[in-house]
Amino acid sequence: MKQQLTVAVSGLNNTDNPGPGIPVIRALRDWKGNDIRIIGISYDNLEPGLFMRDLVDKSYSVPFPSGGTENLMLRLQYIHEIEKIDFIFPNFDAELFTFMKIAPELEKMGIKTFLPTADQFEERHKYRLSEFGEKYGLSVPLSITIGSISEVPAALNNFEYPVVVKGKFYDAYIAYNLEQVYSYFHKIQAKWGLPIILQQFVYGNEYNVVALGDGKGNTIGAVPMRKQYITDKGKAWAGITIDEPRLIEMTHKLIAANKWRGGMELELIKDKNGTLYIVEINPRFPAWVYLAVASGQNMPAAAIQLAFGEKVAAFENYDIGKLFVRYSWDNIVTLSEFQQISTLGEL
Image (tube, rainbow, N blue to C red; front, side, top):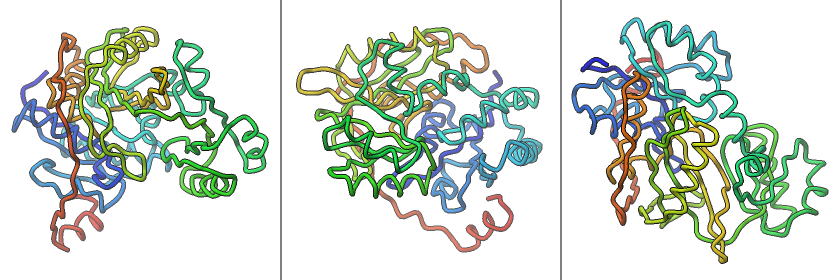
């Protein structure tokens, strides 16, 4: 791997539902400092990361993956001709499958990725989580996938309120009655489409684990944290690293069994009996990944090293009792900067 790297990173939305892009970039800056050039790729001209000049060297707008791989590839080829990208870090669930499909073409262009396989990506979907739990011996709350509003009454016969209503990619709402289930169903469908997942709400403490698998069954890194402050969208706004061997063991067991490749996040709830339930498995690094970096495990940097075929020793320790507290910051930009990204697609 060469000394000076150019890395493209998506997920630059640092809002109340932040993307992982900015913390991933911070991790890469910690690793290589000025020996890395960061190219931001954005689907929205108001993603805050576009205007964070101390972190992002240059930014480009790209078409939504839903528009097809051809348009995305044409845009990436244009960017690559200018920037000579070495590695690309897609950070949104909704874009990952597209990037997995075009990864061989990117490799031919000299752009490396480090992503899960299509099978790994598909089997951990929210609407397949029950099957996933059975396959790998993990406790999962009762979940039912529904494809139309007419299926709601029959599906609810299997649950007790409250019920969690989830989208296939993002968003989750806690419903306490039938009217709320209908309301959240329509809200999520309008944004993310079908199917919708109904999941039994589990009372308990919320935990997360960020991890990195090498694709051969080895866990390169794993750091657990407990949510300390949760937004109305269910996002951790503060969290603390904890000493919980069961979470680490569960992560190692899962990665050994399915040979996960790339970053991942486990979202869990521990009920009053101490049972750990997996409620989601996200196929990429989470927005709080920088807590793991600050605790001694720079997994984004390790992912790039693995992609280049370097031998990476597994992280053995992390700092326990380290907190992150997220905050908002008014980043002032000029109208000319916004016009530049809006009209030229570059900043």
